[in-house]
Length: 369
Image (cartoon, rainbow, N blue to C red; front, top):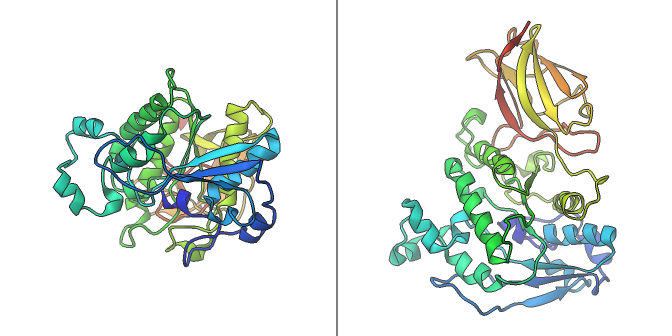
C-alpha cells in the first residue's frame, strides 16, 4: 500500500513525476479535498475517527496521496463537481491486515496469538489495520473504493483471490452496500525485482498479478489497472515508480465510464483470452483490443517457446481484427506465449486508446486445420 500512500511530494529517494505541475495547478480548495486517516493499529475495532481534511492548495497538495490526487483531478474536470477522498492506507500491509480477526480465524492458517503478532514486523500484522483505520470509517457515505496493494502478498497468490473476495464483501457491507456492488478499482503491484534469484518463469510477482486480474472475473464490479508500461529500466530496484499520474487517471477512467456512465471514455485494457496454433503461427484472441494493438515491431515483453523449450522474443506480429498472429524465427512450432511475465518485465503493447495489454501466460489450446 505504500504506492497508494506515497504523497505528491514523494518519499526520500523516491520522487513522484509531475510534482511541480501538481502544486502550481493546485488552487482548487473547493474542488478537491482529502481526509487523511492516521496510520495506526489496534487489537480491537475502534469507532472514533481522528485525522484532518486537506484542501487542494499549493501548501497542502504535496501531502496528498499522489494516485488519489490525480484520480480526483481527472474526475473533477469531467464531472465539474467537488471530489472528496478518504485516504486510508498503511504501507507494506497485507490483505490480511484489512480483514477482521474472526474471518482470519476461520481460515485456520494465521497465527492470531497476540504475543506472536506483536513480534511480527508491523507491516505484516493481521487484522490490526482493519480495526484501527477502516472500522472507524464504516457507515460513512462513499461512492466506491480505490485499492493499490499486494506487494506483501507476493508468494501467496493461491490465497489471494478468495481473501480479496472476502475483503471486498466486508468493505462493501461495512459502508451500507447491501447488494455488494460498490465499485472497487485496484492497481497491479509495481514492476520490481522482488526476487533477484528467480527466473521470469519462477516469478511469484507475476503470479500475484495474474491473481489480481483473476479478481476481475471473480468479484462483481471490480477492475484492475495495468502498470507494466509505466516504469523505466532504472526503476527495477525501486518499488515506488515515479509515474503516479497515469495510474490515477486510469482509475478515474474506470470510474467515469463504469460508475458515472461516460461510455466514450475508454477504460478497459486489452486481454488475451485464447491461444491456438494456425499454420505454424501462434494466434491469440484478444478482448478490448479495438481492432488491433498499437505496434507490430520493436515489441517489448512478448515471447514464445516450443514444447518444453527455451523462451525467445516474438519476431513477427500481425493482426486480423482482434486476433494477434505471432511467430519467432527461433521457434518452429509454438506451444506457449507470454507477455509481461516476470518480476520486472515492462511491455509496450496497448490498444488504440493507449490502454496497456494485461500480462498473460497462455498455452496452445488446439491446432486449427
